Amino acid sequence: MVRIMVDSGCDLTQREARELKIELLPITVTFGETEYQDGVSLPPREFYEKLIESDELPHTSQISPYVYGEYFKKFTGAGDTVVCLTLSSKLSGSYQSALMAAEDYEGVFVVDTLNVCVGEQILARLAARLRDAGTDAAGIAAELEKARGRVQILGLLDTLEYLKRGGRISSAVAFAGEALGIKPVVSVVDGEVAMVGKARGSRNGSNLLRKLIEKTGGINFDMPYAISYTGLSDDILKKYLQDSADLYEGHIRELPISAIGATIGTHVGPNCICVAFFSRDTNT
Image (cartoon, rainbow, N blue to C red):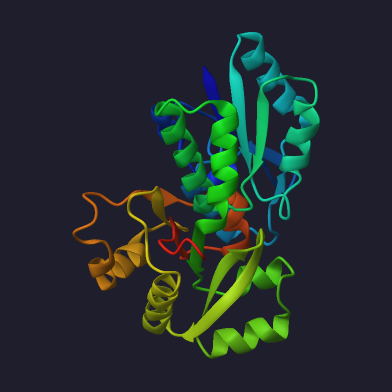
């Protein structure tokens, strides 16, 4: 049997992971001196309540080699092979932890997704699809490493405040941006988060997000895709979906919507919209 593992930075819910037969490993989130398990003891809504109320940003901890090793030991001991997906190695040490743990076991394949959030999630969904189609662990890992370059993830932020608090931009830049109503769009480029555009106001921001999706060659609806949001309410997501309905109508019956948890929510704050998909353009 092929076991698929992924960290909670992918923002799958526990229920979704069970349905997909994916082992979901929670990342530790620390507010002050209190530790929580992302998505387990700290669901997204509770996380954003704490984030909005807190004067300091929480900290997230990479999954340790010991934790990975315990899972690898359990699965390989039962005669299973393992495909373990991790957050981008350029943003987290979890990939190195998994590699260290995998050295002691045969049949364990560790894949650096070079992605975060729902970008990582759609690769995990692809892994489950390949497993169900009968692909072995080595084949799944190889396909994921080929496919990860076609993952497109775009996030429209509502505020620059959390980028400032996390040290990603200066206070002066944040102040100027907020005064002008700047809505930045971020992506994952070569495994790292980068700003790929900015617009004044929410409507222009949604239009920019649409243009950037079109620029990639469009959404490949034959592959996994996801739409997600941050914060206490999905109102901003509903507005985006109304404005962009023609992108999805006629292609799908139901949109796969996720709530973004602590791993990325810490840095982007509430009221962010994020889309992830495989581009149609194979040269992207």
